[in-house]
Length: 234
Image 1 (tube, rainbow, N blue to C red):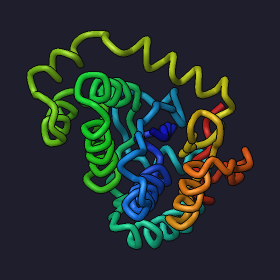
Image 2 (tube, rainbow, N blue to C red):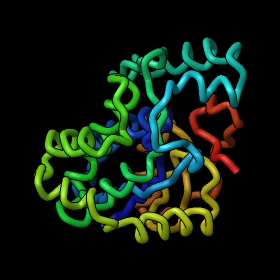
Image 3 (cartoon, helix red, strand yellow):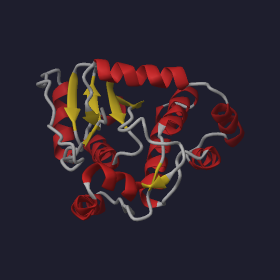
Image 4 (cartoon, rainbow, N blue to C red):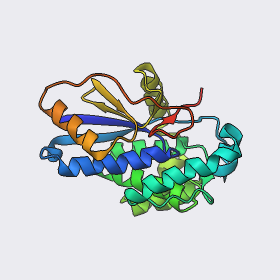
């Protein structure tokens, strides 16, 4: 089996794009049924408050409000090509740590397919539905829609389970050099950074599967979250 670990954040629009493109590559890859994809946590900005507020305000404070139309226009165009409808005007920024705990739980208790379904549901809720992904009641509903048991999810979220494991995985990501998301790590050896085109992901899958090897280098990302990857807050 070929393992792919995807380091990403729920609050990263390029992670949403990258997920769609990588899934297209898997669908085209003849050995797709032998690829195991797991989603690992990373937080673009761990200082984001748990209480949700307008995403546009937080981005304006970081990049300048005058930059937002350009950033959003590009993402809207790219997203449309991948079947994603971004709604930045209504998107809410909230701390994603609880969401990452839930994704950890989905993988641990239900498996990779359910985790992938939940990841997609959380991204859609965040970027297309103006959802507060820090709200535990809403997270319970979204989890149920992705195939998790509602009561079991509510019990999990009310506990502190998974927190230490998620924080450890975030620390490990930093240790291996993850500095922007999405970052795709193939077989624990080769890293590809950014929401690459589907064709690029397909080529990487073919190279790794064929044991040809790929260079350990990634696409550089600027701090404007505008080149296919979102830079991490320091």
